[in-house]
Image (cartoon, rainbow, N blue to C red; front, side):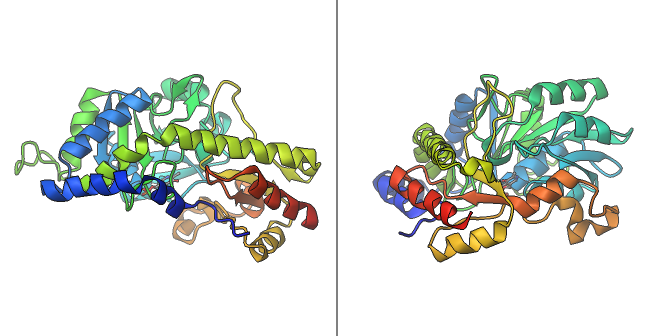
Length: 370
Ligand SMILES: *Cc1c(COP(=O)(O)O)cnc(C)c1O
């Protein structure tokens, strides 16, 4: 049995006709950048998340970058980010000439903790980027309280968490702006790069729309220096088709996660591995990844690979210890929870269509090694 992390080919085969029709529609229209499909997608995703404005951009990374830019983050500013996340969360801070300040995480949710945020605040701190890692919302109530007290901007990194709810409100409604990614392997993935910014702030939305077209408003008249960061019409048309299936796919991921939980517990394996845990009771986890922790992770991964079970390590190195951030002066031992997580986390196959038999095949292999 061959089990990939995610089976995008199978997903494509199921919606092929609709996708090809959507692509064809764009090809015939000759409107390939922005345009009607992008505008409709922006409205549909704003609707879906309960936010007011969606601004389609070239990637999730750009969604973060333009958001910080529109919030006037620049040289001399500090932005607090978790050290345990995809690199883009911190990279965008550096690209604006500001300094990422790394914070440690909760050992069970893997999200940045409110306590760590407060601990890292200085008089240069201008913003914080909570990441809803693996699809589980960060503790937004406490984070927003801290932001209010210290007058900080908040950009939610929801690149892994579209549709996740924190206390019955979808992510995207807490911070000043929120970044979504449509990278192919994300919960809502296109067939190339793409991203979107969500905001409930009209002025910010207007500025972001100008920033993505070189700061022009109207065309050829530049208020400020911006970017070329637009969503392609083909991606938007594809994403509009896929958005209709997102809830169904999310339910599939949640079902897979529940089945792993059940089988691991039935076999007593929850004594040997740390299962994903919900931090806030009335929140939902959309399981972009199902991530466990285990000692001797590398040995286990190798064994699973030999049995044709794909797994992945998100992430093998915390950001504060990355080579490109050596000059920031962090050392091993500075952010210990994240450092330990890097050695122990393992993401298991999470395709929404995995069946119980396949999941049992996977958990049986765990039994053999542990
Ligand atoms: C994927 C991802 C990004 C970047 O998105 P791209 O579309 O690949 O640029 C940023 N942050 C997190 C947490 C991500 O998972």
